[in-house]
Length: 158
Image (cartoon, rainbow, N blue to C red; front, side):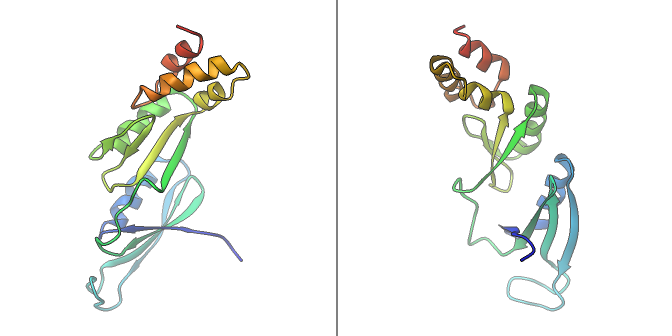
């Protein structure tokens, strides 16, 4: 066995999505585009059937399968960010044309759910002082985009 590849079902715009994702995430690229050699149901000859791409060193495939299976929140991508600048950059790029949800979650313009998570939040939630962790978690529940300074202030009781 070589690897497991996550396949994402798109409604005709897999190449556009893969190009966008690979432009904002490090160690990412389009690996291969497979075009239909002939007319098939829902696809003209020469149209993009699949796009193989790499995001942060992991393989994915985008399949242009049609509108019948939209994304749901049951599957999301979690991006662990080192600092607020990274959180802000990822949030801005991925939420453009999509929708902001809550607690660091958003949906991109294709309806795919993302969690933009500062590493510091995970550290705060795992604090051995459980009251401190509780205050950080309660602050997180009141946020849409996560703010590290506000999470730390809340954890410290401020």
